[in-house]
Image (cartoon, rainbow, N blue to C red; front, side, top):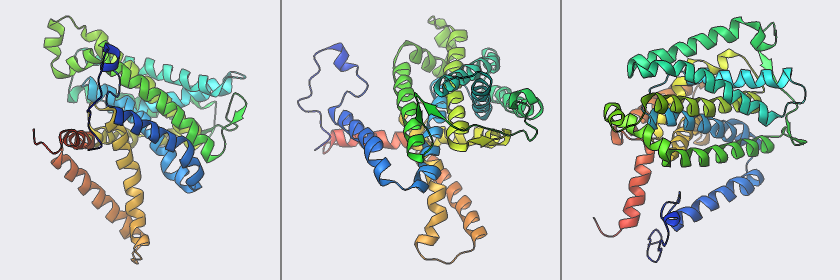
Length: 354
């Protein structure tokens, strides 16, 4: 009864085409944002910020960028970790080599560098697709791993190969405490989430989806494959590059190329698949599933008072985690976001079956 649209009349095109046309959705999103901005910093302990909330926000942003490429444009990519690494190392070099460079500007410029690399490795998508394209983007992963490990200029001639940043501040406000880092990441996620939602609803988003559904038919009706595919790679790589800069600057503080290995690429791809391909909300669901569930499973025996060996607990976590992934993909191949939309539709139509 609470999720009905009775009395909600739309008298203009703008009202009919808004991001959240249902009033209850707008109220729920507003309350959720208010809770995230005001209540979470007052209630959450430091461990929750460091172990769950900050990684969740940054990986949600990276999954959002990957979902634009894989979910909306249908271009398979296994090089997301590489684009995160490019964003992180480029932002680091802008920060240490240019005196007085603002942190936000460094991160955005890191995203621009990731865009250039993403477009470069996206050029093969004009001729190949499917698994062949996945292998081409996988080459980006191996190339960046080699480059950041062997070319000392990228690490500012660091002998160990690791780099670090400290003393972050925005407009004179330090970004040091877990609460400040959390709010900083949340601001990035909200801004890029709104931009991505509006992009996929616009002309360019429709071109991406047309290329995903049937590229030959899209070309026949006048959509340019070069423009559609390369813009998808560019936007995706930019968002992923900014997420990589946030991962290095805010979450890690000090990192090496192994922080953006191929495992990170597969992790982000699993987030998009489990959360829901072609869904902005699915990026958040997938990130929550991948980040929160293993920590919950690790601590569950302790909370239940079950004495269990640490190694056995770790192995059980992997087994249960993998089984749940398979279960969710069998129950709903379109991801958790599809289950969420089905539940919303049932609420809108309740108690009528049609």
